[in-house]
Length: 426
Image (cartoon, rainbow, N blue to C red; front, side, top):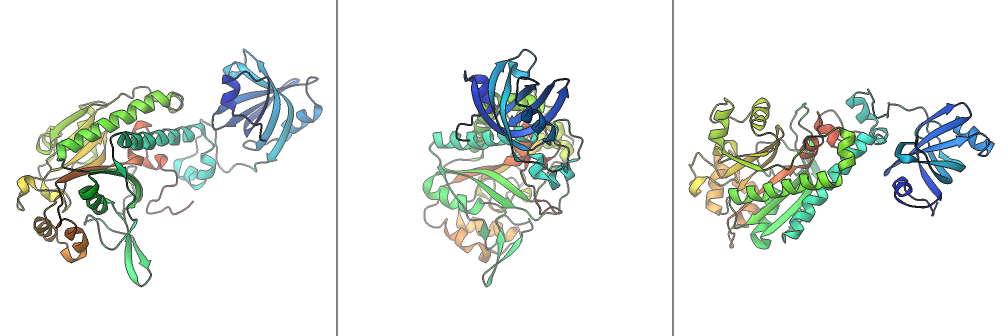
């Protein structure tokens, strides 16, 4: 099959004789004509076999082909007003490379199979155009994020995914046996990206993290991909601006490169967001929340509805609601206000970030105030004793921003192989 071309090349090229390979989405007969819809990652095309014009064996083979079987087809490209896209293939050869057994779920575009069942057979769910569209968009999101910060002179880093102690505190960890020691799956690249920003100034990463929280909602999974940055000599407002710019770049690029995928998903009103900046106190009052408490999911939705399609930053959060490493206002250990922020997009929090503590003694005091043991963070604390500058950063949940851009009801749909409290396979 070295001469095989993609289906999209049939529509864009001028070849008359082609070789194709892909999956059979459907077959049907209409009198002396038999139709086969062939699909590959680039698109679909109709294969039309007319009795008397093609080999009898081809007619017989089409009758035997089950949906989602993998086939090789060679044939002639013909113009056709009736065929989708205006072109079809008149086959000269059809070969079944692997016949599909009876399908375990409905993989049609209008599938009524519930999400849990689709996730049980995720390998089949990936045959659906809608599912493919989600992850094509996610691929553009990741690549745009990476290219955006490469262009700005950031260095991509690879933090460890096995750690010796909690990165943030307050979040349950997944323990692992690391030779003779007890270790944990990383809940964040936080401490490592800070160490690197204090020498390399501008860093980013796309990395998996694990949270052992026993959630069972449409917003949470336990293995997450985070897109993080950390920057020296920046405060919370300066890194919020960095996020506003990259999210606008991501959405603009998705709109430009994923028109077909957005159409498949029925997304019509996606717009390039602008940043809305509100203090925590101002924002919590707008939605009728209580000072000193986090936003509820309903309040997050309500706040975003006030600024449709935009990226809503809530900054200067209470220190009590932010991790130990977030700088208290004016570098005062007892300050009730922090230099921390969240970002909400299309009704859900996609980001937590802020300016970090770069002063070792202040960091020790804040660790103790959070009920944690500074001995568990000695190497982290010590990294700020030898010329650490002020610095700030944030992380965006890849699956969450994918979910919102794609208009999905559940974050698990935006996760290739989701891991939650009940799901460890496939």
